[in-house]
Amino acid sequence: MSRPIIVAVEPGSPAYESGLLPGDEIVTIDGEVPTDVIRWQLLVDEPDPVFEISRGGLEISVIVTKPASSPLGADVDAAIFDRVRTCDNHCEFCFIYQLPKGMRRSLYMKDDDYRLSFLYGNFTTLTRFTEADLERVISEGLSPLYVSIHATDPEVRSRMLKNKRGAYSLRWLRALLDHGIEIHGQIVVCPGLNDGDLLDQSLMGILDKYPELASVAVVPLGVSDYNRESSMRAHSEDEARKVVEIVEDWQNRFLKLLGRRMVFAADEYYLLANVPFPSSSTYGDFPMHEDGIGMVRAFEAEFNGAVESGIGPRAGFFHWVDGAPAEGYRAPREKPVVANRGGELLSDIEDLQGSSVPVQLTPRKKAPIGILTGSYGMRVLAPLLEELDREDVRLIEVENKFFGGNIGVSGLMVGADISRVLEVEPEGHRYLLPDVCLSSGRFLDGIEVVDLPRSVEVVPADGISLRAVLERTSQRSIPGENHG
Image 1 (cartoon, rainbow, N blue to C red):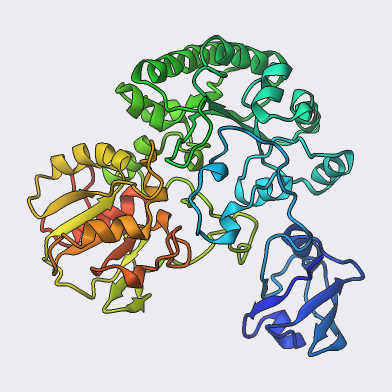
Image 2 (image 1 turned 90 degrees about the horizontal axis):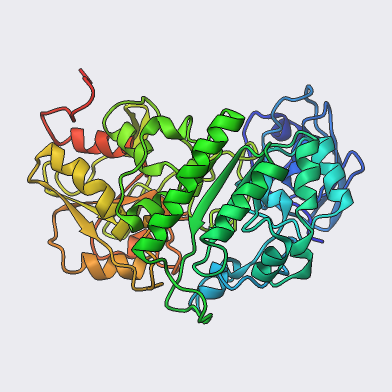
């Protein structure tokens, strides 16, 4: 088991005043060895915690003088200090199996750890969940959690997970709900495996056995060019439309019986099926925004000025693997990278319309603008930009050749594909890139923003930020709100 290491200490904080330093290795806090950032936070919330640390080979005791629940002022290097609980399922549709070689080692980690579910919204199948885990979740109030359901029929679920424990591990879901833990469920629909009547049966099972679920996301499987499972394939348009029909039918049933819709189809399904998106009111307060549910309507509302602040967090596909949040369990993980100019990474940002957007440093402010986006983003942004009637703003589609297959979300754009596209684009234009495809200025393929062949401005992936950037280059306000 590795020990947490302090990576930053805030000047003037209790940690600073007590003498804790970056590089200190935490042995115990009040006699306890913290196993993860959850226990860390609970321990340092206590008044006057006593740290046993290792510094330069010496064991040192440090008493941090502070009131209960006040910030410690020190950050640690990871979310999990003991071993991450890896996944022992062998789902044919698992995207980790479909990654190309040569990416960062951490991206190939398959976790099934309820702690990462609580910290970052990762989905767990509960096949490795134990009685001790249940006791900890309840006693520490680790809520909400996110559970992969896929099917409520035991045999179908076991077959999908390729794990006999999949047949009965949903008993833990029932136990968690019985103790008031908020649970968000997910069903990854695989054509010919758990769609059609089986999807209908699973939603009936949810109503019968798990009606307390906060929400259920129905999402399509991603199929990259590296998929080696012949039974896994992308949905046809008719199959996607059928999924939408089943979900919307069950929304009406849940609404009538439970007073809420509960189940929602991913935005991708509406794009695949070529059917209109539901109204914004359908999604309520967008509880599953981060899972691709209602993102299009949320973006539209933000872009058109119907809301004053962003809806929900924006996280990349592998958003948890590079460390713990600095403050709070689900806090923003990093400040956005802002621009690239001649190989120099810039981080000057200003607050505009309540959202962090890039300061324009280069090229000139009135230069034509190209918005880089994936194939799905093209379909979402095109009608919004058409209403602006601005000849100086265009969309630039980044075809995902790195993953291939049916991968078209902006969060999986990589540096190689963006570089390929930018190389044929004119110099001197402004290129906007959504931050959702980056982690610490790095794409999934390891390329950094500073390596791109054109300067780019990295914009938070919400409609407010995009609107703010575009308004700065126009004398006209974007329709939908008076910003005077």
